[in-house]
Image (cartoon, one colour):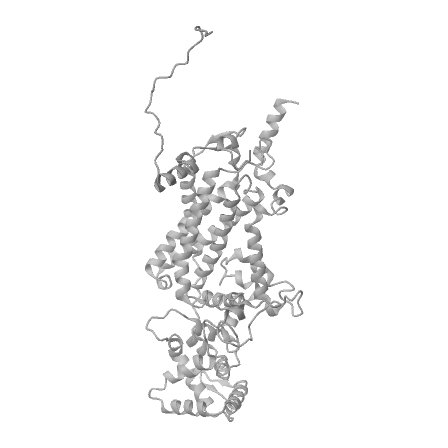
Length: 332
Length: 225
């Protein structure tokens, strides 16, 4: 008869049974774990590094902010050319051979970088600012070729911009058209905190979606610099790290590990897997490993590993010793 | 010929109330019989266990449940006072700390429990489904922790969200599961995912209690597999 079908009395035949108090064990575990949690909480507290805002970014590094905003307006940032689910571009679309689930899924969180990050917030801020309204009109009326020339000139000039003690950014003169004024107003808007709010506006009153604000932050270099200081970037196993000296998501060690080794981090790659599609490859590998872990009981070889590597002899060492004594007492 | 001297079996006089024959029909009676057969109260709340459970490996399961209990309790308090409370209140920060350390302990104990069951091949003798439910609990717990990290409303949550989005987008789930959408992540973290984990943990406990603890590997008394 299969072991899975027998009753417990038959299943435990030959096994010594001992008194056991389940509720006592659970109670002790509850109290013990609570005690450790309370001690750790009281002594070590928990991490809480304040969030970055567009306001704090524009104050701390106004040139980086302006460079990013200009890039959003010209459509040259990562998000502007990202692809699904934000837009129909292809800059960040990952695929493996013919498999491209990102492309197949399509656009579901539409983001139009020039409009959503710059033109729309500035338009909403034109009340009482005739110069801004005029600059916006001029910019929108210009040809895309002209817009591109203004933006390129302004971006180049930002490379030698200077920042005064009060945060004022001085850009060398050039043919920037209305872009100079637009960016000046963007900086003013961001420094006042208004841009943080404007990127959250939607067609309805309540709002809990921070997609646009976070994508804008992601396009800049400021938040990445802060993350580097906190050892949170990918090459520092950042996915499993926490701010400060606190433990992070240690359970993600295997997931994070793939990002540190070839072919996942190489430019040349192997079997079509490289740094260009590392996310897709790593998630795919982890999904496969999770399925294998799920199916361990029914996969010959995998389910035999515990028998081949006898760690169980440590787990049940007292039981095995007891069995040996019983066998010795019985004699040959 | 009948041997009259032979003892005649005598029906013993009833000393207790006769056992009730459960011959009732219907869905309810059927489910009740199934429950009584699968998990009688003596198995749900046992007072005897095999001696071989006297190993530290068996402690990891119960302490995982204990950590989950305090994780849920601290999470309920944090949810009650709102997502921003713990940033502005020292009491709130303390409850966040208990939540944070409960998570750490929950995962440490759960991984130790998982490894213990792996090396003891806990899926043997008809316990494959118990193992599988455990793996699903682990996977959902990782997702629950992730949603918790991205709703902290601090720098860590911003950085995790904008990095994780690329991995989620790469498999085509970015529109369905938007890590940048606080509202979606909050709902998943404080309700749907904890309910899923808790229900599966209850199922896992029932599976363990119904089948009992698996016998040691290569036990000479082992019944045929």
